[in-house]
Image (cartoon, rainbow, N blue to C red; front, side, top):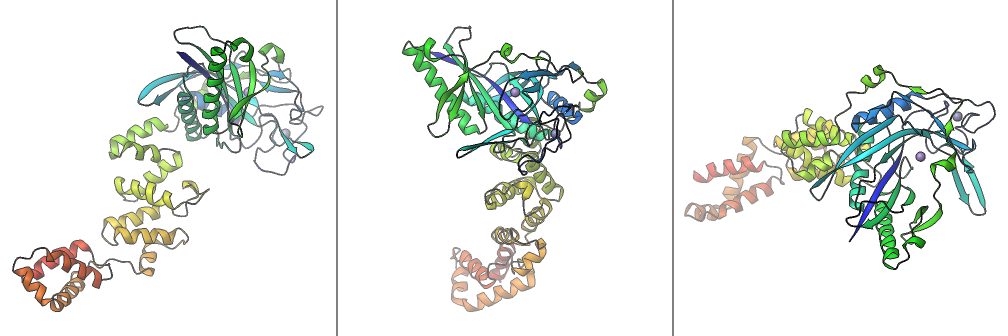
Length: 474
Ligand code: ZN
Ligand code: MN
């Protein structure tokens, strides 16, 4: 009987080498307060100059979400005090953002839906407050790092839709390489605006904003908690008292949202054009440069489905990142066939990764895994032996062929050697040979087993079958 209304604001940290307004490095995890200069810590005389790389990345996003690039936009000061904001203002965009009017299509339980993206604007990040016992410290390495704030219309109606949108956006910013979107490091953080209303009404009620979340799991929990809280307040007749426009935080320990501060309106920030910066002018040329973006996840999925006939969940896994998809396609270019390449990549290789390992840090290259897969397809080794070779290669940089011979796993496919094994078995079991010839067909399996055993599992089973049939006919 209630409907949930959700709008999302994502702050994606752009992966430029230097900050937005100065040439300090953006590298993560450096000694505190080493990547700083007068501009990014707000000393007198510091003057901002735009990092054009950040603008290029914003244009790339606009191509990926079917949005419009505004060829003239302004930078505004958004004034507020916070200890990690030494300038006393953030330089952001207000009336005209660099990108507007895009969309992303999502799918939840087979149900497709378009989420409209209102705008994406450039702004700089603040530093970081570190609370350490009785002390509070400020690290300004992050101050001035470029962010792209991507804002949707309030189009989502459930936490499932919100998460589907966020996962898709997360995947896209990585595919087009504008952000590493590392959530633990805070390079992809989300503010959620939530309100409820009785089903059938069109008016929007008071919204609460839950700030700064960087885990899909917590975002989902926070939304579900907040929706329940608002519905409960409505049903208790306390809606006007308990649901007010405010900023809330999600407390991981209690899985609840808690009030942080009253929500400011835009007017409170006294936005005004930054007098140190000219309007941002984007040429046709710059826009044209980013017309052709890399193949996006959706297009890749459709192509994989059409060309390789793989299953849906396999395709999801193969396209989860661009690196994963590239690895798979490289395996194919080295001669592996799609179905077996997919299963050796998704099941065998990923299954052997330890925590923190991923496809980009894989100890085995796509070429090597393809060679291994081809050895199995060509009957040089059995599938079982292939797994042993893979185990071995996880910690060795030996070539595939060398590993096979070092482990003594090469399959015996040579007819002569197999015939010899067969003849020995026949000699040892003359009684059974007679029984077989008298019609006890079931014994065929016994002979196959004996030959395989004698070869220590290395004989090619197909060849054994073929040659045994001939030998037993004689
Ligand atoms: Zn700086
Ligand atoms: Mn922002």
